[in-house]
Length: 303
Image (cartoon, rainbow, N blue to C red; front, side, top):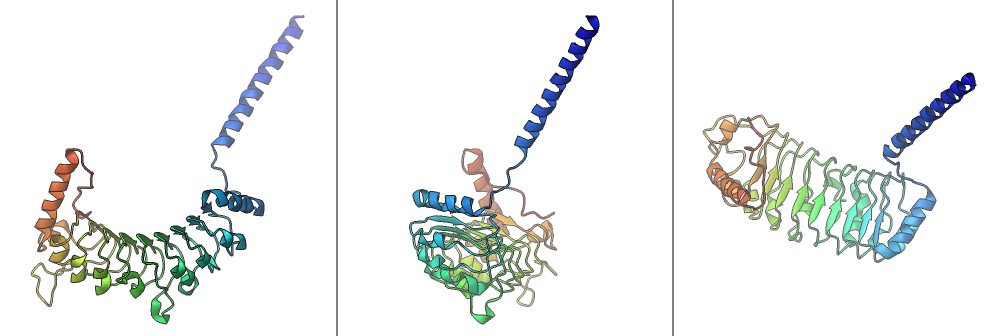
């Protein structure tokens, strides 16, 4: 009898351990990130739902082309086709109600994005991590005039296409051209009268044009990891200040990031107009401490 009891106890102990092990395994499985389902049925279901919501996300579906059914969603407002294998946008120009379009991380060349020019109501466009190249062949399209946010980071531009600084883009507020191969900024940047944020990180820029000082609403300028340097702080026509005084004095700039450039904070402090920039930041910091918007107060990322 005692032997039977001992065996039963041992069996019960084993069952408890087995239960705990299974529970733990189930817990670990549920904590793992779910992989995006990419089957045709899933795509069809998403398209069907988009008829009601006017929002469609087909990100990470390994698509080589946009399904034809998408082009029948003529009331669609938001479309995310990022992280696929797209080389063309097909008849996307039919989606005339589209306001937000994300095409990041595909294989699109400049000529492939031509249909975007037909999206008259588009306000936000992201084309990062594609194969957009220099506009020498004039293939870069005219952009819709209502665009407010334009992201073209991680492409292959060595110059900024004139279509991006078109005077018609009077509503453009945010422009991201990081991680290209840009050596300069065109004088046409002054056409972007509504621009408040300009991101030019990870390029090969050595100086900023005076015309940027005409962008009166500019508040944030990021130039991390470029080649802006100071050979001598005795600035002359032959040795101009790499960031003009007008950028500091004539804009609303309060956030300037120069981290990773071959210059020092001491050199930056010698720039004409820099005092006006610091004073404006000081006022912003005071506002932040009394309940306003808080901005980063580190001095431009330089040592």
